[in-house]
Structures are given as C-alpha cells and as structure tokens.
Length: 113
Length: 112
Image (cartoon, rainbow over all chains, first blue to last red; front, side, top):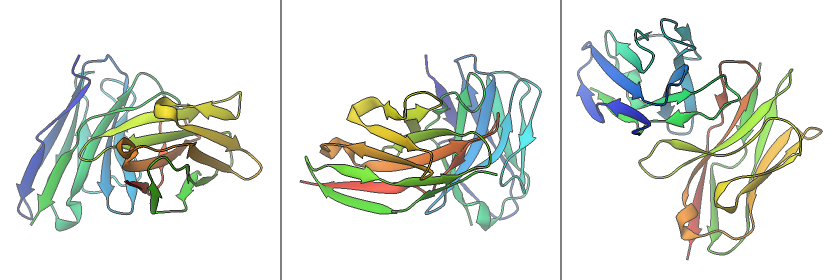
C-alpha cells in the first residue's frame, strides 16, 4: 500500500515550457486535490476532483489544468510555465468530503526559470 | 466564506516544555477544524480533527486541541515537547463539502 505518490519529485522548467505532474493513490479514494505551498502562505487549493471524470476549480486555478480520467490518478498540467509557478506542489486524496482525513503525497518541487 | 489565522509564524521552545500553537477561524456556517503536521521534506499528515461532540480533541503524538466557539479558536497544545516534534503545523477549517482552507503555518522549533 503506497498511499499517495507523486511524479516527478523535482523539476526545473524554462518560462513557457509545459509539463504534467502525476498523482496516484491506491486507497480507492473518491476525492483528490492539488495544492501549492509557498513560504508564509500555507497551502492553497489549485483544483480538486470529487470523483472519476470530474474536476473543479479551487482558490488559485489560473495557469493550471487538471484531468481525472481514472479514479486513482489526478494529473496537473502547466501549459506555459511562468516564474510565479515556482512552488512545491502537493497532491492529496480523501475517501469522502472535506470532513474526512486528507492523505498527502511527498510533494513535487518545481522551479521555473 | 471561511478563513483561518495562525497567529505565530514561529514558536521556539525548550525540550520538555509545554507548547501552545494558536489558531483562530472565521466562518458563517458550521465548521470542521483540523491540525496537520509537516515534518521536514515530507507531505502533511493529520494530527487531529474536530467535527462535533466533545470540544477537547486528542490526537496523535500527545497533542490535543480545544474548540472554543465563542472565541472562534482551535489552539493546539502539548504538555511536554520532544525534539521529534520539530515540524511545521497547519490549522485548517472546512465549512463546505469539498474544500478546506489552510492557515499559513507555524514552525515549531525545539531547543535541547
């Protein structure tokens, strides 16, 4: 039981490049989330999904897209990276709604030059 | 709309001393409250949560928190800290079905 895994762990991009971050969970959770963590700002929700085939915007969705084609996977895409997207990205999942415990992945550290 | 404020960005304490990490929230609806901990270079993990019932909530690693509706607070306490408690602690609030809002975090540093 691996829990929540994230790929890759580190990435450096140049401005304008694109990339996809992969989140996978093996706990059969319905809800999945993408957050970004910046110093002094805690975690901010980018997008989330309440089930396979669904996605919704969070607090800071601009510049990101997501897809949930399979229940166990939640992909976060950056179409044209900007330096402001330099951050640590965390994926999380939960069995049910926001009253339930969220399980977090180890994070992806992204630097955009 | 919900919001959460963690009043201290850093809290230094000596080993075996008590600690309190402060958290205040605002919400126009019923709230659910959480404390998560993040050890260095790791993701977050749940310490404890308040959904309903007893206002004193006990969590893992000897931590507890008290929900105070009149003061809109959910402070985290531990009577005696250990070096291994060095981490960043996040308070979070949820009032909607799908989302929770995290505070900015409090970095707890333990001095021997």
